[in-house]
Length: 465
Image (tube, rainbow, N blue to C red):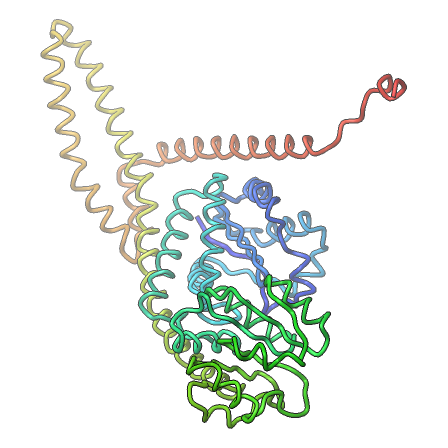
């Protein structure tokens, strides 16, 4: 069995290409079944986010696997291969496994160490498992990748250091207030950076937002997104008296708030802390505000410096996670080596059981006078002899299969015990089962498509209407 991943992401394809390969959430179950029904594919998982589309497959042969995956993408998305070939990456076996571990732990993300991708991979795996497109191999691999990613985030704390200016601002506010619940946020200007910061504030418990802007309609547009209030610049000082947090991002040439203006307001605020974030360039907030009592002022340089130091910390954590990935890959490789031993052991036990049954049949023909109790005792003793004879060889082959040249050991074991016939029968049964699964998946897809086709009304009924 071989593991292959084919996909495109923010590094290999611009958004104009990526958006052509986005799976609609409602279509994913059918896409999984169609992918599983593709030639040579035994198991599959589809991971689709705004930054990546990836097809993970386990195949019985690597021959033409890339061709089959490209053909699936061409057919499903209706995009000729020539238009996406140069953007597509295909990794096999060890590289594919390493890629999955990096993706799940956030090391392959646009923002290194982000945790959202972990939930997205987990959801993709659970959907595939629910649709029965995974088996022993992917059930083990994806569970291992998800578990390792959780452990990596906990042990290294890679996601605890914010690496966006807006999020860094919110984390600084936490140090001052502890919680944003019940805090009043005042937004000066209605730019994109202000909006991103408010999103993070809301995610951290903030509830009351007032947007102040020169144009009331623009202020209302942003405020409505957060169920907030809108106001104009002439009422700025009134709102400042009630605010706990001020985020300013305008295109003004001079200071929007001076030290003199805020000084008058502070007297009426009764020592309540005021957290001020100046994201504008040139600055909106007078730098002297930072020297005032109970005022905590941060500008874009303060925030960027914090972001840079946090990025450095994340890269240090990433090195630790890479070491964890190598250990997990070694453990998975050792496990996969033992996978091949299971059918060999089953073949040996099947052959031994058949020999034992043939021997018992021969015994009963030669000694027809044996009663039921005597036959039971003989059957039990002879079965015990067979099991004892098999015990040591089975233990040894399990150990040898886990070693570096495990495949060679399994081949030799198969030849010594002449198990080729039993293994061939097992493979034939497995192929028949896979064929039945593929046919069943095809029928489900066909029925689903037919159910979406509107059946025209009978001609007679139309005439009556």
